[in-house]
Amino acid sequence: MTSTEHVRSYRPDDHEALADICVRTADNGGDSSHLYPDPGLMPTLFAAPYAHLEPELTFVLDDGTGRAVGYVLGTADTQRFVTGFREVWIPRVSGRFPEPAGVPGTPTEEMTALLYRPERMILPELDRYPAHLHIDLLPPWQRRGFGRELMDAFLGALREQGVGAVHLSMLTANTPARSFYDRLGFHEIVVADPGPLTYLGRSTQGCGRREVGKY
View 1 (cartoon, rainbow, N blue to C red):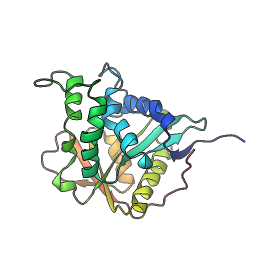
View 2: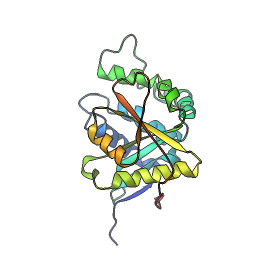
View 3: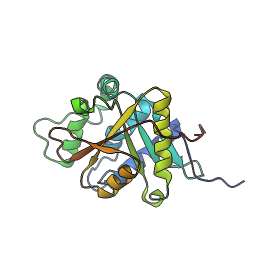
């Protein structure tokens, strides 16, 4: 029997693949390895804490060989996640990524400073959208319908937990990503002083959760 690509639940041995996907998509959808000398920085911010704190909401696209080539991950409750990030996650990673002293002067220092400000995720305009997510696929797996499959799995899992709405933030300059989210029914959420980001949200209703494998 030939294995085929499929969406499945995250497992601990996907950890390195998640980090690699994050690095290779973190520069406005492209490879960020030239920006941050430590390849663990971006995953420490945007992938690993979710897999650690809420693994039940982490799903991967398996290429059919067991290797993850895309993921969706997030939290059902942003405020709860922020508390866990500060109390559980930061102590785990602060030795490798100490808080910068003074005003950040390099891309690494700027991103490391964000690590110590998880409360930035809590905005009053997002109260009606308590969950949030990140989704990334390696380039060869984009524009093939797999992003929608990942999103179906995540939104369905939220709905099963009784969560009614979700939000995400994206770089406004990433127009291909915006087109993808528009097709999936996301709409813009106006927030004060969004900086380079656009915030989008949608209901978890109307999504049909596909059967997701655990292994």
